[in-house]
Amino acid sequence: MKIGFAKLEIPSTGTYVVGVHEDRKLTSSATALDKRTRGMLSAAMAGSRFKGRKGEMLDILQPRGVKAHRVVLLGLGKPADLGSLRLQRLGGLVTAHLNRLGETTATVAIDAIADANPTAPTMAAQFAYGARLRSYRFDKYRTREKPEHKPTLRSLALAVEDQAAARKLFAPLSRVADGVHATRDVVSEPPNVIYPATFAERCKQLEELGVKVEVLDEKQMAKLGMGALLGVAQGSAKPPRIVVMQWSGAPDAADKRPIAFCGKGVTFDTGGISLKPAAGMEDMKWDMAGAGAVLGVMTALAGRKAKVNAVGVVGLVENMPDGNAQRPSDIVTSMSGRTIEVLNTDAEGRLVLADVCWYTQDRFKPKAMIDLATLTGAIIIALGHEFAGLFANNEDLAAGLLAAGRATGEKLWRMPLGDVFDRQIDSDAADVKNIAGDRAAGSTIGAVFIQRFVNDVPWAHLDIAGVAWSKKDHATTPKGATAFGVRLLDRLVADRYEEKRG
Image (cartoon, rainbow, N blue to C red; front, side):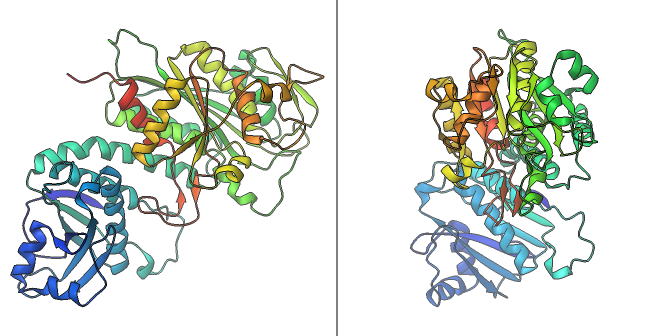
């Protein structure tokens, strides 16, 4: 779908979308259109339940006096509540609605609103951003889909007074959407297409944006002593990879240390010898969503030329149960030198992150390090599919992440750490064991395990198991891979770590 910006005038073709505030208060463009159509908008509202509440829509076919063949009244709600998230959601809802109607071309009027904080160009950019996020569709393997089930909207124009300003504001948002789409693409792919080597190939494409990309193979990992990650991978015919992505957007900064993002990239997780039940195992193609989010945020930062030094490191493995697979009670030696007793091979993501996080902090000495992982089913029991779990050893980093979550709608909930949990993973046979003695506080147990491989760097762990995939459509997220974490981390960088532009 092509998104552009146009003059603030009634279009000569397609569908025309105009805003209506709560209690049926027409915006300027809606007022002008109502006058042109000799009261058709007022009459349509009077004969319906439409009140202008946020997200409500009312279609008017073949309006008289104009060439557009359809008018859509869009409920904006209260003017004071027209923030960025609402505008994004409205953009997504309108996009989905127009596709359901079979529309190909549409224009949305964006009027300056006295009681709203955003300017008209900002509103246009945020609306367009939401439309672009919702327009995503993973359909490359659908070869027999009926035409009426396919999206039809090819062109969406945002009509606004200052088109140049809107276009400038939308440009970086569109690059963030590129990152979201990149993550959704890789997470949506089946595991016979995306496995460690092919995921690494996707990462190499970031070189086109100026990102330095290195790929470590199993021989290099063995030389580094990454026994924890290699132990997970040894049951698969697909060899593991680690990918290091460096974006140097602030080379002259006084503090050149990067912010680091680490991702769990288990491209398929059978559970290994501790085999998962067959029911639902197909979902485990997205057990690499943490690594996918790291790919996406690096795409976003490089795409919008963020003035920050950032590094993304992803550990890519496949957890399979062949004759060479890791066994419960095996003991492996991590890159840190700590030995790990593996009591459950399905608690594999923390083993991957043990080596990835240690490698990242040891090599790059980051100013902060954040890992993302679909780590535990327990976080879904605790938080459902509404929040990701946030664990952090640093209050300022935690506060920044929580604020970024509120700003982007990618919500986090702070979860506990502490010695009382850490003691539960002391092992009688090794330095640490990968699970506790029971299933209590499972998400925290996973987090304190990773924390043992973190040292003193400000660190946060995001358990995204409940939010990486959606079984239903949302305003800006169609059913499927959500790319949770891309917008969140891009916003964190913009708010807390990016060099301010002069």
